[in-house]
Length: 60
Image (cartoon, rainbow, N blue to C red; front, side, top):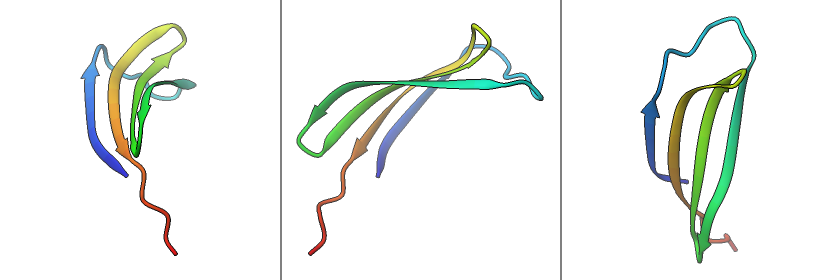
């Protein structure tokens, strides 16, 4: 479940072209997961961000 999502818009995202989403795990502490995100068109970064997610506890 997403706890926070921060986005920094770097340039307009073009339409009608292939986009690439890259992610990198920054940390995993207990149920808290921090991930770095990037949206790019070719090699042009359109947006960068960071997500903090909380893993749901297992259901019985």
